[in-house]
Length: 357
Image 1 (tube, rainbow, N blue to C red):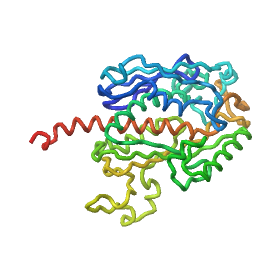
Image 2: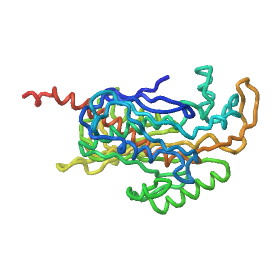
Image 3: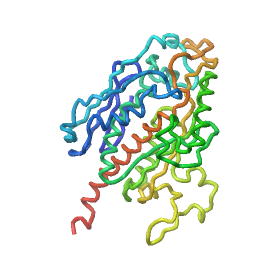
Image 4: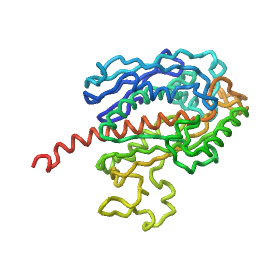
């Protein structure tokens, strides 16, 4: 089972939804990066369950433990091991699903691939796996901050409600993490209505990376936008990715799509900060489509492991919409991609002709 991501800066996540703990092994981090448990905890607190009525009511404090690789507030260059213990697991809640597949869920495909599955909250296919990503992403964020780069994500669509304004400070002041005050209130009402109906909603999360140096990413097979797509599409429930104008570029002429260049920089940023798979120095703007959670109380038709038809209504503690908690996960994956690309670029720069002139 693939649980590793990255080239130079690599992460390997571990743990199951209702197991004793989840966590991450982070390799390739340079020494001397200022980071401590509080730094990591800030991002984990934004991801943890039970934050509001629009998220699952599972109560997990998600307190991080640093096992190795950080000493007296800085990274040592050694492997970093981070673990988060589970304290509110209720595997008995999933006993009715032991032999039944949830429509829209990975239950069926895990069963077909491995012949066995962890039905307790879906094991590795649970959103709880992302704890390790967020913890590692907090370290990667500190690497980027040394370059002045910043990564922020926010919800721009829930169902058919679309945010227009981009007040990024406001995005962290409301439960849905939307940067548009008017749309945020509508989104919250829509999520609560879906929850009360036993249903769920999907949406779109936008990720903005600013002050990213030009020249990051490798052309042809390892483009920076391809790496971002890999990282973001590896998040559970993400079904679509675009950068810059994305799919809207298919409707434009070249004269409309091209970003004019001036002595002071690009006049626009329809490319989303990447050309030829390499960062331009402009803000990197990407978006992901997040599907509605599949665990819903609305009655559905399904089958069991013996192939018999069954009726299913899923009870328990589940998110009615994943976007608010996907926001910190998306930030983490973008931080990891960009930090990895930055470390690779530093190696190239050492060997460039002008460096040895």
